[in-house]
Structures are given as structure tokens and as C-alpha cells.
Length: 59
Image 1 (cartoon, rainbow, N blue to C red):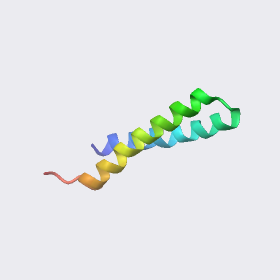
Image 2 (spheres, rainbow, N blue to C red):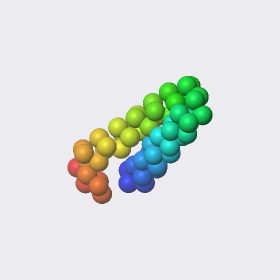
Image 3 (spheres, rainbow, N blue to C red):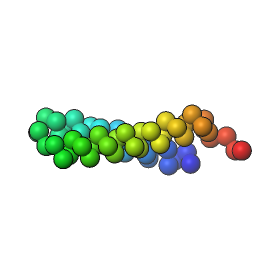
């Protein structure tokens, strides 16, 4: 789960960067998809860290 959280965190960051580039280019569809994917992947990473901690604890 460690590596998966890192990968999803990178995806969230890169999708938000892409959304801000889309704002500069005024591409509405790219803004929507960039922000939506950033929020979904970011929420997954945040909730996983809050629930399991980093590094994850075996239950």
C-alpha cells in the first residue's frame, strides 16, 4: 500500500498541474477532468494516510 499511495499522490499532483495549465489555455473540459481526478486521487491518499498512517500499520 506504501507504493500505491505514493503513485496516487503523484497522479493527484500532476492532474492538478494539468488543470492549472488548462486554465491558462481556457480548456473547460480539461479543467473539469483535471480537477476531478486531482480531488478523487488526493482524497484517497489523504484518507489512507489518516486511516492507516504512513508507513501503514498492520492491523
